[in-house]
Amino acid sequence: MIIDTPEVQDINSFSRLEYLKEVYGIIWMLVPIFTPVLGITIGVLAIVWLEREISAGIQQRIGPEYAGPLGILQALADGTKLLFKENLLPSRGDTRLFSIGPSIAVISILLSYLIIPFGSNLVLSDLNIGVFLWIAISSIAPIGLLMSGYGSNNKYSFLGGLRAAAQSISYEIPLTLCVLSISLLSNSSSTVDIVEAQSKYGFWGWNLWRQPIGFIVFLISSLAECERLPFDLPEAEEELVAGYQTEYSGIKFGLFYVASYLNLLVSSLFVTVLYLGGWDLSIPYIFVPEFFEINKAGEVFGTTIGIFITLAKTYLFLFIPITTRWTLPRLRMDQLLNLGWKFLLPISLGNLLLTTSSQLLSL
Image (cartoon, rainbow, N blue to C red; front, side, top):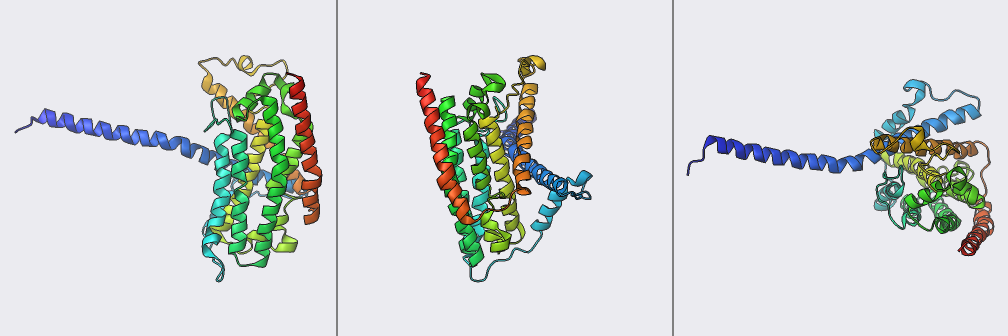
């Protein structure tokens, strides 16, 4: 059977069209995955630069200034240097645990970004159990640190891993109780619903004003979860060389470095969402849609404004953990555990009881 040339050309063009459609579909499937990853990476680089500049200002010295304009590429240069360094393994350590530990720490923190809303329609997955999923995922990270400490076959590393696990357990409970109080106030555990519940009442509807005790407890607990000074006991230089990081070098050491700043960013984002009204500007007497003349046609512009407001609140809040690093001395291990179990836990329980009582009385 002979097929005419025009028919063959039609079949070829159809197959090319189908192939292009498949390629286009794959690209569009990858865009939502790589866009947040790129955004998070840029966010971490910005935090590192901010911390160095603020630290330099507090200590009255010049910060990074040579790598890029105002030294903004310094963190990128440090990351590239770590990437090309030799990857050493301890001779008598457990190499599997040693290698898996940093990956677990980073992946568990990256998964937390799934439920953070940057706008009313801009969240990767709006789940009904959003905030509690974050708490469940974030409790996996200390397992990675403990594996790293144990796999290093080093007493300093093992002590650092044990401290990280003890610290995480101690401060997760007050953190969870504060989040539970917010869920009771908002009648939902979805991060989007929590922000919308605050935006109903404007600026004075922020949970910062309705839950001041919970906010302070959440702030202290999140600092301890991020292992920031004055709670950096797992990697105390004077006692444990570098804690669970002691035996690490190259890219694996870089993963720990990235994980700490990712955790700091995710904690600040959750403070913004839970206590500072999220993407809602809430300036008294000014409504953002009317102020910027946003309507259905300008929905993209409205989403952009929402992202900008969320990030502005997050980075303004970041000044608190950065300045506390150079202001407060490190606690002892017994003081750290006493603060968690004997002070923050009863206060957060009392705060939950007050919130529950007020919600029952308002019915």
